[in-house]
Every structure is written in structure tokens, then in C-alpha cells.
Length: 334
Image (cartoon, rainbow, N blue to C red; front, top):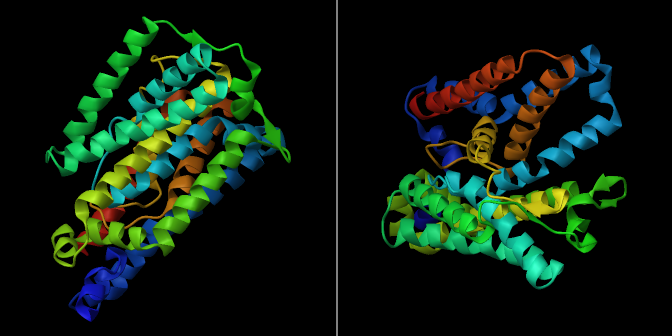
């Protein structure tokens, strides 16, 4: 039993056993940088923009940043565990669009509330299919999710005929435009979802198994972890996040369209990586994924407010991603 328990410890601490007197200290330093660089960088960016651009620090602007990026953050939170388990969901943007279309179509043909629920369920179903393709059919997660993403967008176009589906029922837009205690409902939903998934990852057996699978899937399987079930659940959660994000976005504007979400897949994965989740698996945290979204959102907002050429925003974002990946490489190799 003790041997099994040792195998299931999160891979984030595996470096402690490295040989060499200086290795633990070097790796500890790199891990601290990897895990908290997003926080330090975020604070620096926040202070710099607050000083140089007064409009940035206004409560209205900060609330708008959270509101506009809530769907993206929900997608990032949902797919974090899949990435921890060495899986990549390239269908995120497609599921986002398709779930919004499904929600809008159901809202017009049945009931707005049923439409909202149906859109989220659609995302979960696609996630389950992705999980089964990866675990049962043994298709690489890149190819499996890329294929399902292409198919769900095509299916969405069949439903819409290539046009937007507008929903006039006010109850459909409640989630997207409503407020509670001064914050938009979308922001509250993000906070609730992040807390729930964060607790699951940090305190539950599912979370421990997720780290174990990402760190060493063979050892996890030999220890009795049901890899197929856990990995499928992770992809289902990723689909839930993308579906919920798509429904919220559709509710914000009162319509569903397959012409949205094409860039959100890479944006969500980039935010997770910037937050310190290892693309090689075995380490990561939900709160850091949220911080990654916040950092990239502040940069984009600052570029817009200061009227700097948007190209610089892309360059800065690319550099931040490169640094995050480099730190992960040093953690593995150091």
C-alpha cells in the first residue's frame, strides 16, 4: 500500500529525489519561477498599466476585462486537468461555437432555459466522445480532438445554414448580461467553476490520479488507477468548460454562430501554459490558469487603451509563452 501511495504522489514533487547536491536547489528555483512567474508578471503589468493609463485602473474597465474574458477563462479552467494528464483538446473553439448554436436553436424551438442547458450538455457529450476516442480507440489526442472539432463546426453549419441564430427571449440573455452584487453573472460563474474544479484537483482522489497519470501513466496504471475512466472524465470536463463558455457567450450577445471561437482553442491552451501547467504533464493548478488568462487579458487591454500597434501585443504574448515553456523544460531537465 505504501508503494502504491508513493507512486500516486503528484509529479510536481518528483524532482526532490534527483541526484546531485545542487540539483534540488536548482530545480526548486525553476519550479518557483514556473509556478509564480505568472503572478509576479501579472502584478508588474497591472501596476505599470495603472500608472501609465488611468483608464485601466477604473472599476468599470476592470469589470469589463473580467466579463469579456470569463468565457475564455472557463475554457482554460475546464481543459487544465486534461493538459495535466498530457492530453490536448483542440476542439475547444469548435465546441464553444457549436454549443452556442445548439443553445440558440433549442431556445427558439423549445424553451430558453432548455436551450442553455442543452448547449452545455452538448459540450459534455463532445468531450466524452473525445475521451473515448483517446482512451478506447487509442487515437492521439491532437488528432482525435482536431477531427471532432472539424465535424462539430460542420454540423453547426448544417443547423444554421451558415447564418447566425438570434434569440429574442430575454430569459436567454439573463446569464450573459445579468449582474449580482456589482459583478456580471458571467464573472460569478467563472469564479464558482474555478473554485469547484480547483478543489477537485487539489483535494480529491480524482485530482491525485490526474497528477499521477500526467507524471507517469505506466506507474499509475500498475498502481490500479483506471486510466481510461479518469482521462475520459478529464475530456468531459474540458467539453463542459467549452460548452459552458459558448453558452455564456451566446447569452451575452443573444445569438449563436459557428463563425466564432476559431482562435479560442490556442488562447485557452496558451493561458494554461503561461499559468505554469506543464505540457509534458504532471503539474499544474487551476488558479494559475485563471492568472494566465488575466495576464494575457491585461496585456491585450493595455495595448488597446494605449493605442500601441496591436502587433506588439502578439509579440509580447509570444515571448511570455516561450518563457513559460522554457521554464517547464528546465524543470524536466534540470
